[in-house]
Image (cartoon, rainbow, N blue to C red; front, side, top):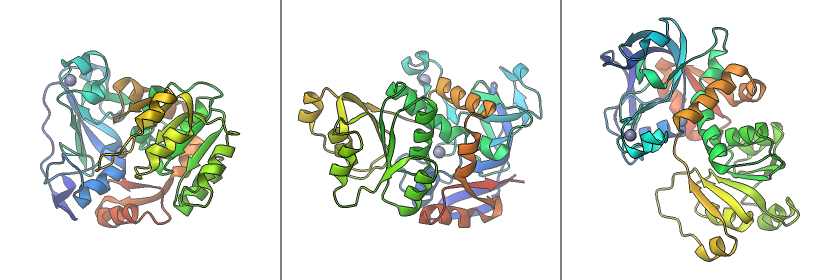
Length: 341
Ligand SMILES: [Zn+2]
Ligand SMILES: [Zn+2]
């Protein structure tokens, strides 16, 4: 099969690669569209802590089922339009037993630890695969995985109807969180983002925005909730000061959800966490149940008009290097897809 392979850090090439061989309980998907994620850029740049090279990256795929072996295959038909949670898990550890497969002790992520979907075919666990309606918009369906991240993050936060939300970081994940929070009935939603293009993007989608690098940032952010603070804050920026902004601007007994991966340890003012009785929650990927939530949102079309706006470019697989460079530059692009033929 044709595949884009990162052989060494900083170089990606279109090559011939062996088509994945299925074991019992696995399925083979012919990739049609696949989103490029910040993780893929990290893999390309060599700053992913656990990646193994050479590697075919890519985990935000939608495609057509071409083969399914053994367990679970009876639930599908060849030719189904499918998406899949990009995880291989053990199914037996304590986390798996609790349905928290995203923190499985033996977690292996497709496109990070095993070959991903920047290729004609990708192999998945059949029981983590879901059929989409025949008439689904395949480009929107490629957003199922990042949407699942947002569904997971909002559900973990425990956000209730009418509550106020602060999102730090207005990239694709931050804005998907904002969109899911709105669907969930949030009151006011404020997106804090330093990049002007992304700020405009968020405000065009109907969110209040603020530039964290601007003068009087803290005071204006305080004014946005009339000094009361936010019920829930999402740290999706990864900037050194972002967590302390969350601690300062989340109201007493509020919840802070930590999404951003930072390479350096971040200091926490535990005195404030104590005094305000804050809850800090880490989130990783998405549990299978929350992935199913994203599948249902995509299938039902509840966010279609919002999600349509996310996709700002589509490149053929052959132009993967240019596509990655576009995402890396962050210039005037939001979500970029690869089209695999
Ligand atoms: Zn992703
Ligand atoms: Zn497990």
